[in-house]
Length: 139
Image (cartoon, rainbow, N blue to C red; front, side):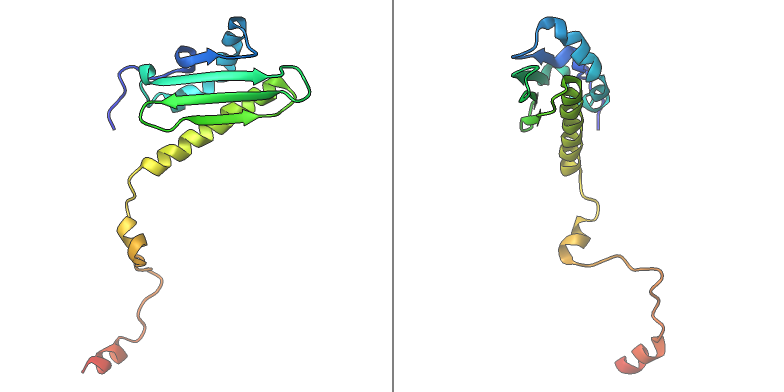
C-alpha cells in the first residue's frame, strides 16, 4: 500500500454540528485524537467527520458521529450515554471498530481458494500411520 501524501487527522477533518459550538471543537478533537492513527491511511481532502448532539445535557441526549471517506460507505455511530464525555468516547470507539472492520473486509484473502473448496492445509500432527495398507489397496 502506498503512503498517503496528505493523511487525514481529526483536527483537520472534524466539523461540529447541531448542539455543539465552535468553542467545543478543540476539546472534542482532543478526545478524538486517538482516531488519527486509523485515519492516517486516508487522504485529508477525501475524509470528513461530523459530530452532533441532540438534546444536549438532557436525560435523552443522543450523540452522533458521521464519517465520510471517498469511495466508501458513510459510517454513522451513535450513543445515548447521559454523560457527554462518555458518549463522545463511545462514538469514537465505535467508529474505530467500524473502520477496522471495513479495512479487514477490503484486504485480500490469502487462502480464499482453500476456504471456497473446503480443502484444508495438511495437519502436521495427522500422519498416515498405515502406508502399507494404502499400497496394498492400490496393487
